[in-house]
Length: 93
Image (cartoon, rainbow, N blue to C red; front, side, top):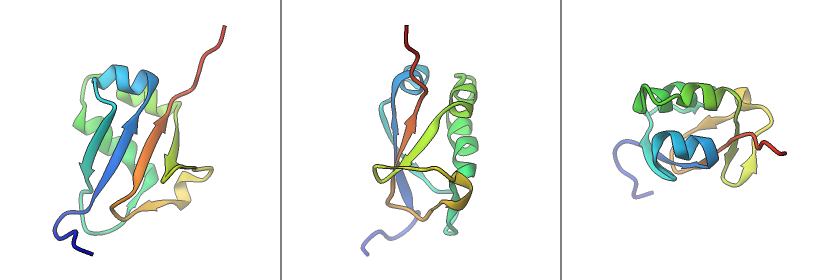
């Protein structure tokens, strides 16, 4: 493990989330050396992109960690090195 210092995750943004913040991918440092509950990630991302409406988008979105959909975010923690995708709801017509 050559990752010395602050652990980071890679966040992938799609659809409305990408449009709101103008990014498709972002490396995000975790706030401490302790694992971050996935349920706390929304607050961290919203604080990084204040005033862009990301909070409303994340409230209706799902998460994927390392290409696996997360059914129980309250039971998932991030330690650093993960790839987390914001999966926005898709509207049809």
